[in-house]
Image 1 (cartoon, rainbow, N blue to C red):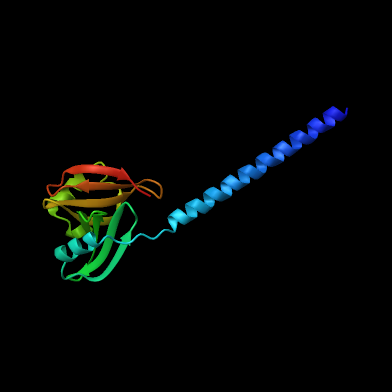
Image 2 (cartoon, one colour):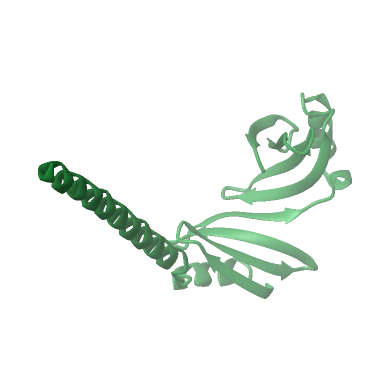
Length: 165
């Protein structure tokens, strides 16, 4: 009988030890993830230099470095723009808001012919890419859950689509 009691005590201690170890591991992981997310990284100087060359008249400049890429929001010629650079300072794109009514006729025609024509347009952007490529991104919603971004080229051809929140 004493052997069974000792065995029961060992099992209880073992379970308690497992809980303590599990709690320590979870606490450690939370601490590490919090430290990683709160880490502030500086904007690379090369990105700032390239931005200054590309947009010398920019005003109200706000930088953000999320480790993957550098984003800069700024005002120029009365418009609010957002540019994206790699962490090596390479320009990836610049986007600006554009009213649906001001989209090029070919883009509006392309949208009206697309399978998304019956959806509500909630946002439109004009996006500049390297090599003088321009794309138009249209955010459409069928309901509160079904939302998509659809991209058109300058000729109104649907070139890409993605789900968004």
